[in-house]
Length: 199
Image (cartoon, rainbow, N blue to C red):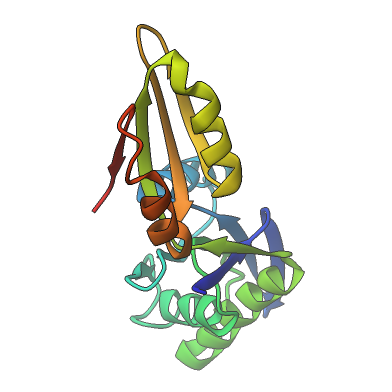
């Protein structure tokens, strides 16, 4: 089974060195849009900070990621943050480390250590949560088939995202990739329900 981990909720870490303060904020995220929204909120909240360095990792097998030094020397901030996310074997995580400059330069080695330690402290506090690789699923059906659909949702642990019951019924959800072939086998002769599974 393809099992992955994210963090359950936001956590915070703090590291101080020679007057500089490094505040690490870790968030569970599911999209780049969510990442951008959190970053915008943090820039407003910590508007007086010198640097907002960050890294995020999204996805399962085919992961996307980004690391940003936000004005610090190249690879001294974003990479150490990303390295800790990977070290904790997490995905769907954003970590932003906000630095208040204390007047004394730390050097590249000192910065790498500071960003790594602040991130580590935030992630150590995090409660891990299992996530499964999944596929998006749409089910279109008439009211007559409602009980069949509800049974499928229960039997195949489908996570319902939206329900739209108007002239006809439509449910958007996600199904664990590992249960997909059994689901398709079970539903192959159900002609009263239309199933659309994302590629």
